[in-house]
Image (spheres, rainbow, N blue to C red):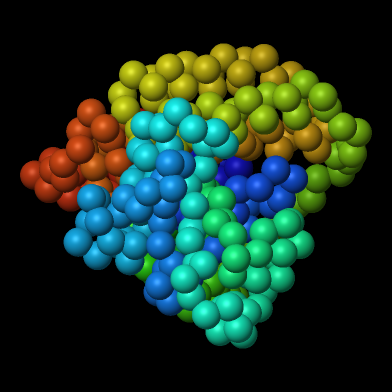
Length: 306
């Protein structure tokens, strides 16, 4: 919505994927904390073989982006089903695990997995967007009167790869700074309201389009990306945008917003012809500081770096 209103959007290619989300049919993609690996949990590929020593000196304790890519590559290289990797905690003390991770233990048990006695099926999952509405340190966007804080904003504090728990920085610090900055502006602005009611009726066409978008984004703009797939995806998103009719149904609004965000992510990922942090291009696997040690910025007019 901010983009359509004319605000600049920054760093949308930097989407963080959590490497270990529970992957059980019928279960939500519940995140299984890195702390499990800190306690000694091992990662196994679909063939039940340990693999992280081949990818990074820190093995299971490697950065999130490294672990997520390794899991995706191991799954892709395997012919086994289901298409998952496994967390192995069976060698750890069961009583200690239940006491140290009560919520993880209880949630996994709810969906039929005993983390103390069984391999836990996992896959990477979309987790945190480092990009968003470009703001200054007072949460002001490029559009007068529009402020943003938290995950919807991009202050640049996370760089290309947020550290665990640093999202509190945006939520608390920049939320407070936004409130301070808005105090003097609110009283002087004319307020307007929308009288058109949004319909609650479901839209089967929008629901199907949203599901297809999710699958396509995961395939071509997920953990591992490359130019041809991104270009194909961008064309598909633009085709879907043409098909989506203008209605006042909530589902149609939501799908329109999903398509807009997908478009911004893909265009930014195409423009950054290197790999950096959470953004990995298989066709450009190295970091290129000479050309891309900059923030991507998307406006209605162009995509550029600054």
